[in-house]
Length: 218
Image (cartoon, rainbow, N blue to C red; front, side):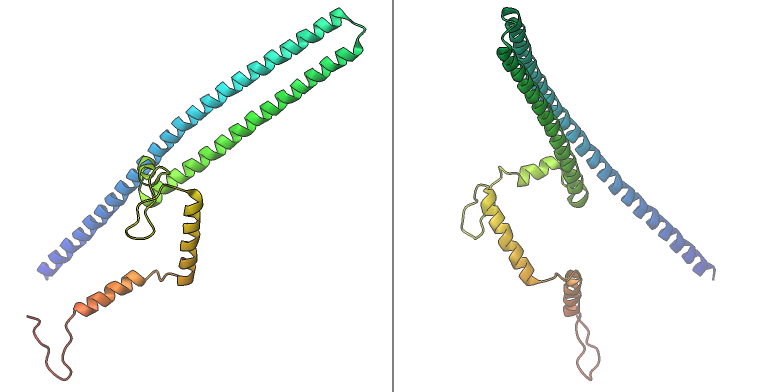
């Protein structure tokens, strides 16, 4: 009885140690995933900063040009008013020019705002895609681009053919054809691998002859 109690105690300790080991392994996996996500976020923030600087430079350049145009138009208006206050027609033309330039400024500002919104949306999409790739496939973004980027040749559809350069239209047709073939196959049995493993295991187990004693596998 003491030996059994001691064995039971050792088994309980082993189960506790195994549980702790599983918990530590899960914590390590979570830490690696968190590190990968943090790395992806840092890269996205750096890319966002580069895009933001480029947008800011473009905005400053555009605004400076527009301000120069408005200043030139305003100077021309003042010169026209001083030269001939009675020429209302020319003054109206200058005012129309100023109004057009102001409208152009509004369009440029709206365009810049739209570009900023589009960049922000793309950055969010890239961040989501990068996080999904890291979480689901455990692949860094740089490795994904290196192996599957647009500059990597696409494998040939048949043996003996050379790898082809990436062509979106061609690859979309290949993807559609593959999707049609997949649809024809129907739903995939999620237990297929387990069933196959069970069949292999059953095939390796020797069978007893009908009506006879069990034979020694040796």
